[in-house]
Length: 480
Ligand SMILES: Nc1ncnc2c1ncn2[C@@H]1O[C@H](COP(=O)(O)OP(=O)(O)OP(=O)(O)O)[C@@H](O)[C@H]1O
Image (cartoon, rainbow, N blue to C red; front, side, top):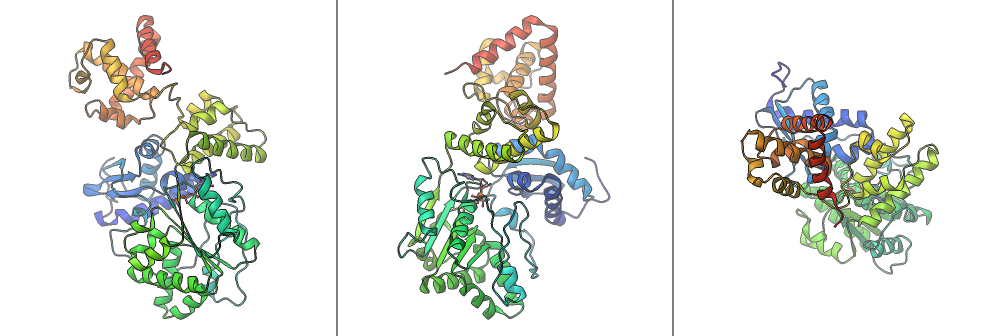
C-alpha cells in the first residue's frame, strides 16, 4: 500500500476505524460482523502501520485468513491507505477496547436504535412515556433465545437451571442474578431468555446494554433531567443490564448504577446482570456495589466442551434446515467445526452460518472438501498437530536440525524440507500464513505461500517427492 494524499492525520485512525467497522457491518451482515469484526480493536497506528487486535490466536488467524482483504478495502473506501495492516493478539480484553476511544469523547444524546441482527418481538412501552422513556424501553427480545434453546452441556447445567429458576420466580428472596463468562459464551442469550420469562409473567422488564444505560444517563444529565431518568428506571419490575463492565468507565454512571440497584433491591424488584468478569474484578465499581452483587446469585458460564459445541451446531443446523430445507450439513462437517477448540459458541455459529449460507446460495451439497473451499475449514487430522511437531518430524526425516528451518540458509538441502514443513503446517493446522512465516524464522507470508505452491507443483511432477510428503503427512496425522 503506497502513500496517499488522502491519508488521514494519525489521530484520525480511531475515527476511521469506527467508520470502517460500520462499513464492514453492512457488507458482511450482522452475524459475521458480530462474531469476527466487532470484537477487534485498533491497538496501535504508529507511523500509519495499523495493528488490529484480536482476543485470541484463533480469531487472529481466522480474521487474517478470511477478512484482511475486506478490511483493507474498507479503509480504501474511506479514502484511507494505512502503510500496513497487521492482525495481532490484543494486549487487553477486547470486549472493552472497541468502545474505549483514545481521544476525548463528546457525548451527545442520540435516539436508541435497536440492534438489527435478529428478528425482534416488538415490546409496547409504558403508556405516556416521554421520548427519553421510549428510547429506554425500546429493546426488543429475540424470540428464539429461550431457556429451551440454550444448550448447557454438563458444565453449565447448574447455571442454566439456576437462571431459569430465578426468572420463573423460584429462587426465594434473591433479587440479583449475575452471570459472567467469556465473550460469546451465551450470557446475552440467557438474559434474553430471562426477559422472555419475566414478560410471560406480566413483569415490566427494562433491558439495557451498559452503553445504553450510560448514554441515557449522560443524556439526562445534559438535559438536566436526571430525576425523570431515575423514576423511569425505578418503574421497572425487572432491570436487566448486559455487559456491565462498560459501566465502570464513568464514575458518575457507576454511582448512578449503584443508586438504581440499591433502590430496586430495596423495593424487592429483580436485577439481572451479565458481564465478562466476576463481580470482584469489576474495576471502577465501589466495594459497596460489588458486595451487593456478590450477595446475589452469581453464575459463571464455562466454555462448552466439544460434545456441547457439537450439540449447539446440530441445533443450529436443524433450525437452518427448517428454514431452508435444501441445505443439509453432514455431521462430519459439523464435527470439524466443533473441533475448533478455542472458538466460542458465537464464533462456531458464525462459521456454520457462513457455510450454510454459501451452500444455500450456490446450491452445492456440503462435503468436507466444499467446507474447506467455502470457509477454509481444514481437518485437524485424527490427532492434533502443531507446527513444532511438524518441524520436528520433518527435520528428523530429512536428517536436519530443527534450527535449520529458522535459519536464513538457502541451500537446497535445507530449503526444500523447509518448504515441505511449511506446506504441512498450512494443511494440517489452522495457523495463518503470516503466523507460519513467523514460526519459520520470521519469514514473510508470501514465502509460505510460495512454498505451498512449489510443494504442490513438485508433487505433480515428481512421484518420489509426493510419496515423501504423503508419508510425512500420514505420520503427523496418525491416530494417537
Ligand atoms: N450454550 C449455548 N446454547 C445455544 N446457543 C448458544 C450457547 N452459547 C452461545 N450461544 C449462541 O451464541 C451466540 C452468542 O451468544 P451471546 O451473544 O449470548 O454471547 P455473550 O456471552 O453475551 O457474548 P458477549 O460477551 O459478546 O456479550 C448467540 O447466538 C447464542 O444464541
